[in-house]
Image 1 (cartoon, rainbow, N blue to C red):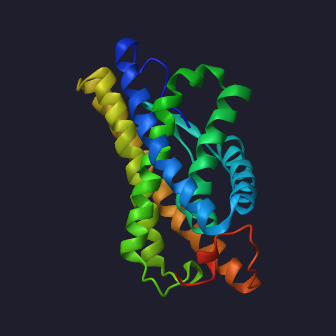
Image 2: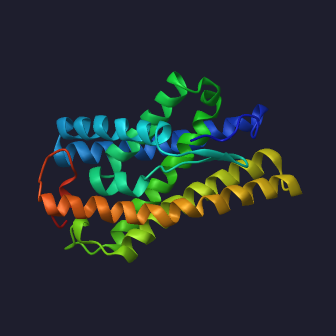
Image 3: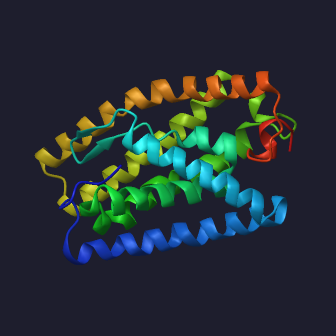
Length: 223
């Protein structure tokens, strides 16, 4: 997943360092809360597994450049429902970094923008989940409507941040508006597919009735 090189140049890229720092600061709080709630070992195990999944999402699942960025099946809501906010955030940041270091070094200058684009919607999704899913409901019991709302919130956030970086870097010319619009329209495919993936994963978890510490306790237990 990346903002195309050249979309934001020069001094403007400094803003991405600030937004990434903000996302990292909030993410650090989530990590600390997770350690207090379930311990460092569980957080580490969930993060490692989720990072491997993120890297495979980026490299193996279908992805294609459209306009100012690439369309990816990031499955952010799936990661959140399976592992929780902190492991999902760490995995998205680590998976993105691994992709840059191992596969696409030309993406590293855009890392601040890209990590903000992935993490800010995840934290918004976390807030929405608290509002949308009743405290006495395990994640395996959420409805399609709830899964769709979570997925749409995450993917919509990704599109919004991509649009922000594009307009911030290149202005509101016709060509740039067209490129952003093409990216946003293509991303609707992800919004359609991801809730189905979420429910399939949750149905499998429910059928297996596993309470493995690898997964967030909320997967099978109410808050």
